[in-house]
Amino acid sequence: MSNFPLLHDPDKQADTDAWYCRIPVIGWMIGGSRQYANERRLVRQAIDRGPVPREAWQDKPYDSEIREKVSKIAIAHAYPNGSEFHPDDPIELMLVLRYGDLNECEMMMDIEDAFGIKFTDELVKHLIEDKVTFLQFIQYLQDAQQGAQPDAFGAG
Image 1 (cartoon, helix red, strand yellow):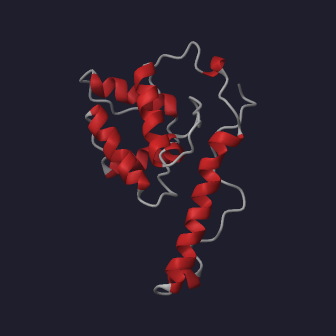
Image 2 (cartoon, helix red, strand yellow):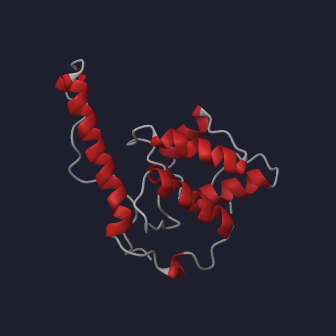
């Protein structure tokens, strides 16, 4: 499984923090178009890498309904139809947390509604900084649905 390409920060990202991107209106338009280009590069990976091998999910403890719901939410808001996600994909990239055009907010609200959780600033920071995987996030949602107070990822 180690040879299967996981979602990763796109190579050759367009610079969105250049000084001229901060010039009102014109700079914002340049920075915004570069941000969208970076997001397109990210989400295209889910198609370009091909189908996730079935064995990637075998013998993993997870709820297939949660996997399917989260995948559908990600595809509805950011990814092309036919996208598939690997259990080791970073959830922060799957939810486009650093690249989005506010679609990440819609994804988080849909996940909150579907699973009864709340995306706090602390949770989002944890997802990004600790490189939480899709599988770990599924397990977190499982714990939350069972009434547990999940505070750690990857315990399962």
